[in-house]
Image (tube, rainbow over all chains, first blue to last red; front, side, top):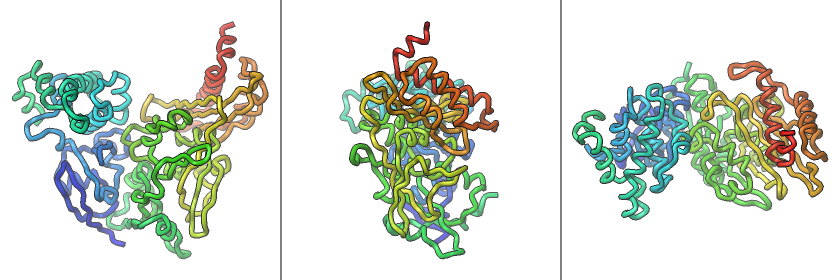
Length: 196
Length: 298
């Protein structure tokens, strides 16, 4: 038995190896050891969802996951959504529709919404379904309506593209449709500057 | 104060037999705390209110995973998550009260991680799945170096967070029989907010009407209205063998007040809980028998 453990896992597709106390929170491993500060800490007790990340495709509160349980897992954080400057449909919709204000809850909400859109497999989820899927993410700024609207807009914009694709690539809201949706409201350059 | 992280030790057993051995410690030694999805334990750790320094991480044990049919029911591995429960096609069909409970445990992030075994072991009187498991006549399988045992849910909770388990018993599974054919199931949680709040009152029920229209199977289980999750034996007795009606509901409601003992606390108060508990009972009876619902209007 050791008070430090060497753990390996992938974060956003990149292999990582860390030596940390086994009960260190995954949240702190990501922020401190992996230097990925996109994942935020809100309440630290699993209520607010600010620290949401994906483990093997499923959302978790990273403040409640001990590092030892991340060994061998595939983790995705908000940094792993966009490809370089190319935002996902979801991110573009949040920018275009005012789904983010102060931004602390936004990384977690994006990942919860991402999980919902993967689960919906190209279907546009209804308002109550989006609200239920985001029930574990608290936002103190927006009043939620714009967030819900953005998630549904992203699902709509991703749909035509996903129908042309095999099921496996539906997991990621298609960027081509996303650009179209975002472009209606704001030029792409501005969107990029706003989020970065 | 939070214990220094570097002082916390985690053992990662190879298999269940190894985990059971790790739980059996010499007298005087610290017994490790079993760690499953961590959604309760990490909260205590982060808040500095968990005293133990040793943990056994069960998360990797395949023997504790999965949901499978077993006899006329299902066996939920102790590590079955609430997401797995709510998404399981057979459970949705046959155990809707349990599925409804699973869908209301925290948000998705919690449901993806929180396990049925953990909810049972944490033994909170507000645990959402516990009234459903109790109303469905579930039983808990445990294992220790002395062997395996099965404990009916009805005799599991002896007092506030006091389980009828030996300190080194590990919960391995929860067995849930399918209720009798044609029975109705009910689950309702009342909290401050529709999602993500701890219950002020939580109730699950199973009820079947015989061919003569009289109740021939009834289970009513409650959370957040006593130090333990409990069956409402007096209310059940008042309804057994009678046809649901507004008068029968009123009698059952009066009896229920003798079954439960809610308190004033940070989440609610006694009077509100008594009123809501009675309302939920009536709602269940009304939903279980359309004639009763029509009779209400007269």
